[in-house]
Length: 336
Ligand SMILES: *[C@@H]1O[C@H](CO)[C@@H](O)[C@H](O)[C@H]1NC(C)=O
Ligand SMILES: *[C@@H]1O[C@H](CO)[C@@H](O)[C@H](O)[C@H]1NC(C)=O
Ligand SMILES: *[C@@H]1O[C@H](CO)[C@@H](O)[C@H](O)[C@H]1NC(C)=O
Image (cartoon, rainbow, N blue to C red):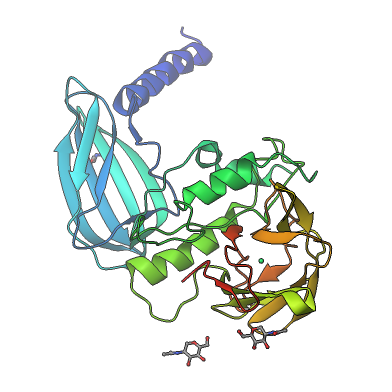
């Protein structure tokens, strides 16, 4: 007589073996997951993954109970990969993408849900791009005199202070200098607030790539800097509205020169109107030759820089401008 336990012991491994051999290595490519966006028409979205060589793979796109399309392919021998190209889809969703591997009449199924069709953007960058969104939830800064970061920011715009510009057409960027996160477990130059960066970038995409008119996608820069020597003021006129979050006595600095020596001195914010502000320059007993804004690694606490555009909440970008003519009423053009 055979003990029931022994029979069970024989059958169970067989089922497990069959199941595993059907599903062995069968998976979507790493970036195919729930809540993803696939490229909309006119391109056909590519779905691919890994599987057992020789197996058949059926990819089904479903919406609710309805099957929208099916594509069949097989796993290639040398690379263990499979790939299908979906028919071009209009933007929208949500859909379910199902992939079924069939090998010797045994099926193995993978599913991802809440898939949308839209435009897929490839973003490039440095270590901040390698930091995953999962790491974020794991929970006109010392003020560094080192101007390495301000210099990098300035050169990122080809020294214009804004993009797009004549040297960098069809380019947009997000200013992130007000998103400091000195307690970030990934180091203080890896701020965890990526959502705000994404929000600011998406405004640039809408304005430049989709041509939405009249959409503000960059923070205020002065278009005119006027020296009012008799009043001891610089008058900055912005090309868009400004909102003063708080007055700051140090974030604007003037280069003050006398006896062939120049030094940076703070210029405190004086009067403010909807599109202009004045800076006190009476601390300079020589000649004011340049003005810079936010010229430190982290110029303010989180979202607490002094100047923003009112409705978009975009921060005024850092800039440096030279004031060449010292006569009263002189204008230095910084931005467009
Ligand atoms: C496996 O999938 C194929 C094709 O979708 C289907 O015809 C077959 O009935 C399935 N077999 C099993 C065991 O589910
Ligand atoms: C652009 O937007 C501003 C306010 O944001 C509005 O006053 C103006 O009328 C708009 N212009 C056009 C052409 O839509
Ligand atoms: C600064 O310039 C703006 C416009 O360019 C002007 O309206 C404002 O009165 C000026 N401010 C001072 C103090 O002169």
